[in-house]
Length: 201
Image (cartoon, rainbow, N blue to C red; front, side, top):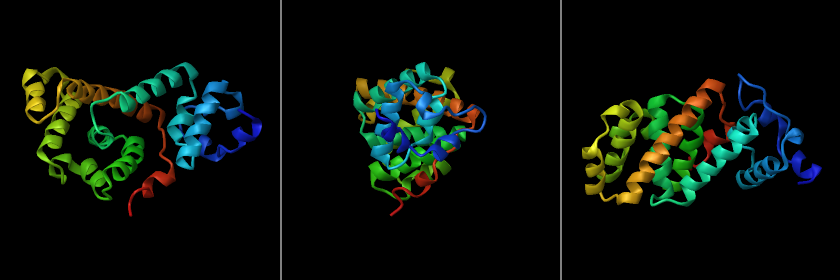
């Protein structure tokens, strides 16, 4: 990655990425992180603050991004289902960053400008089908009361039409974003302003 590539990543967005830990300068990061951040910036049109924040610890950045990529690329779920889980879980966890950033992705992938707000407020009253409500019931139970998850929950998912791989993926996405929510809140990661308006029209 050249110096000119690095300069395309808005440094002000990086500086605002989180409030409780320093955000590293792009030029001081390992090349693979700079390349990934440049790729995300080109794709989104801005640098999502989670990439700038996670760069605080490069080894954790790599593991976090690799697992995220596996969750969205090697999955039995539709992308909108993944984002619905993220927003429902982030809603009950009150994670500002993920509510806003993944709310935008729900609007984009579901092609629905209202759904994300419904899921954050109360997924149980959202305009979703019964299968998705069951999916979110289990995801939220795993979030709030993990010791109570049992075979009946897996059976409910099966009856709702989720095969074995999809059931695993529901749990994996839920677990990963519980981690992400807690880290984002601990570091006070801030969502980019652009996320607030994406997919609303």
